Every structure is written in C-alpha cells, then in structure tokens.
Amino acid sequence: MGVGEYVSSGTFSVGGCDWMISLYLTAKRAWKAHMLTTTTIKSGHRGTKKVKKKKTDTVSRKGFLTFDEGAGMTWGCADFIDRSKLRGLVQRCGSRGYFTIRCVLTVIRLCTENAEAILVPPSTLHQDFAGMLRDADGADVTIRVGDRAFPAHKYVLAARSKVFKAQLFGAMKDSSEDCIEIHDVEPSVFQRLLHFVYTDSLSESYEGERSAAMQHLLVAADRYGLSRLSAMCEAKLRSWIDVRSVATILGLADQHQRPQLKDACLGFIASGNVLGAVMKTDGFKDLIESYPLIMKDILAKIAAFNLNTD
Image (tube, rainbow, N blue to C red):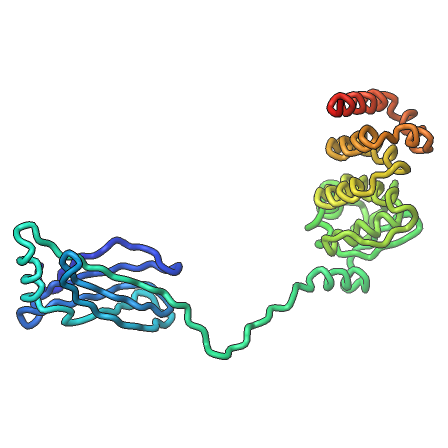
C-alpha cells in the first residue's frame, strides 16, 4: 500500500449514527503506521484499537473526542505502531501469520450538567377551536336548525366534512352562502355535532336520556360523513346496553348496518336471560313493529348461546 492508500471497513451503525474505520499503512518516516476513524457522528465516542497475534502480543491506544454538529469528521491515532514491530509480530507466526485490528467503539450521549428538562406544554388546539366556536370569532356562515342559529366557519366545516364542503363550495352549494338550513336534526344534537367538528371530542353534556341522544348523534354523524364520531357514538352505546335501552339500540344497529353493535345487543339478550324483561319495554314493541324479522335474529342468538353452554 502506498502513501495515502488505506483499507476501509464497510459502513456500520452505532448509536443511531453511521461509522467507517480506515487503516493506513503509509511509509511515514520509513517505518511508521497510523490509523484514522472516519465518522458522521454528532456526539462523543470512545475508541480502542488493538493489534494482536493470537491473543498474546497486543498494542492498544485509547482516546475520547466530542464531535460538534458537523458531519464527516475524523479522529484517529498517528504513529500507532512501528511497521518493523508489526512485521515482527506477523513473522513470528510463520508463513500463515496474520494480525487483527480490533476497534471497540462506544457512543456516549452527552448532556449539559444540571440542565433542566425543557417542558413542552400540552396541546390547546381543541380548546382554542372550542373558544372560537363559542365566541363566534370570525364566523362567516350561519346554520339554522329548528328555532336555533349556530354561527360557524366555512373552512372549518369543509375541512372536517365532505358533506359540508359540498354544501358550501361544491355543486350542492346553497343559494345563500352565508346561511344554511338543516332539517330532521334536533338543535341539541347538532350542537354536539358541531362540538365534535371543532374539538374532535364528544361532549359529555346531554339533553334528555343519554342513550337516545347518542343514537340521534350517531345518525347525524353518518349523515355528515363523520366516521370517527360515528365510531365513538357506537362505542358509547355498546357500553350503555341495558334492559331498557337494548331494543332501541338494536333497531338502530340493524337499520344503520352496525354489525358489531347489533351482535352486542343480541348477545346481551341471549346471555343475560333477560328477553322476558326486554319484551315488556316500549322500545321492544316499536322494534318488532318496525323490524319484524329481528325476532328471528334474537331467537337464533339465544339458540346458539344455549348450545354453546350445554
């Protein structure tokens, strides 16, 4: 190997950074060799390099260096070992002699002593948007639902719902861009839907019976393409299933094609031996009138449950 020529390892990763070790056998003052390590590390490392023959003759050198933010920096040991000594080590091994270069690399992440951790405050985005909705700051559209008017923001509505986007900016755009009228939705339900649009969360306030309010909200969520809100409503309804509400929830699940919610209702009726009590509720009477075939599903679920428990 001539002056400036070297043998290099492949690139390997330590501590999340890429490294490469290069060995120079240059004729510096005739019989000197030196070794450099080339890295793209940003933090400190400690390297140990040994030249050895069958674990008997060893030469080691240790060092420590803290790198700055620059990449491609180098560090190494000049005059690592006399070439004559290296040749002697190899010759003593005979014709099959060899030597091994071993580099032990330790990456240490350095921190400033006594430095206080930087505390990142929690996000207030949902609170900021809730305040914008509440105070009607910059509102540019009014949504009329029944006898109530809700000031809102076109681009917020359009960003959250494709249906709103079509109503405000697409082919479905109303004749009056500053006012939208919505029918077949209760004002209290739409208020909770708007709360979700602006905050991505469910409102915990309910007007009337909570199960009925959540069912109406699920229907409204489906209408406006708010799939996350629909799933949140479904999860709430599933956790609220009881004798009094199971029939109405079952009817909703069947009508709006919610198989998991429907199966949960059927499972409640079958496993709890509560069919008699459920049949006495007004909700069950309405269910059978609206969906007469649902009784077949109920009986099939009960039969399957009894079969599995026998």
